[in-house]
Length: 434
Figure 1 (tube, helix red, strand yellow):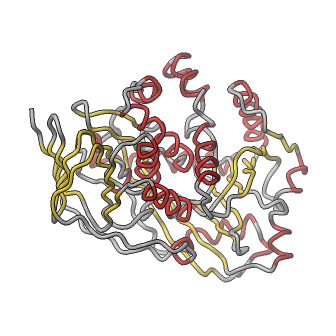
Figure 2 (cartoon, rainbow, N blue to C red; figure 1 turned 45 degrees about the vertical axis):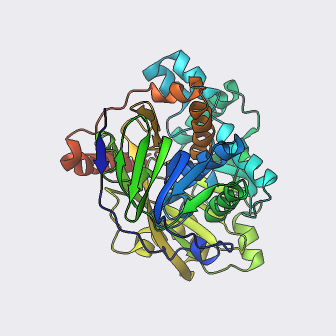
């Protein structure tokens, strides 16, 4: 049976972020014009799409990637650049809700995305300012107790590179009085995310892969083979991967009520003096706090403090990104009060109700992975490997995610934003009350 999903989209303009301003040289790829055939057509040239395409090209598949804007345009090129292990819900929550078998399966993959990133950087010599170590900083004694449990949990699943920094011990890593302790994951890290995805795209093309930019998909026609239509052409493929995440409105309508685009905001200071930068974060780690609505920050290669946080439900931008983020930056680092902000930007990630990613198949040969709920940098790279396994006929690891049920947001599409915002208000109050 043949069915259609269509959407009207317009190519988007580049975002004026620090990452775009400091991106490595990358070619402009021509839009698709005319008919093409491939083993696999990938929709979306962010981390999920490019990671999948690269894994498939390494396995000998002929792959064409279609991107509505440019490589890394969405969350992949705008995020905090933090390599944080595991998922937005940890294995204890997964075990309680979905059983030990699912928890063991997901737990065995919880640190794999991190390893995939490092393999890519090493194998293809990708210049993306990769640094080691990320910190979870506790703002209260209750959060510190949770970090002790977190360490024990991750060690049970094989992460033996964790260090608890009790009391003021965290000050060797962060020059801020805001915290009561921290957990350091030596296996985590941070990088320039746009340069990572651009490097992976170049690696994919070096293996014979094709990427068309400024090529929005307007229709997917399902069948034994799938036709992916664009404004000026189409690709006929045996299999399709839909990897647009928060930027795919309308292409998979059955999934749309089970996820919600959310905006996060980021600012980058002017370059700091070397002494000042090394005083703030002496060992050049990245940091996220343990609040429900968390802050995250790190130093760039040219010593800017990149500081992000906040959530706007439905993907709307605040009136002023700098106005939304600067107060928290100055709360964390009062010594930076009045610091010049050179860049301020926002971007959308995709939130699911259970905070776990959505993997699945439609009509046997259209695959999707999306909804990483804030843990996209590592989980997208795991998703790319699992996609390549599944399209090669090895479904067990892909299906460990695909079998997790996902329910729609309460109130449907009309009320999911206000109801989720109400929930966020409750958690923000909890954060403030400790």
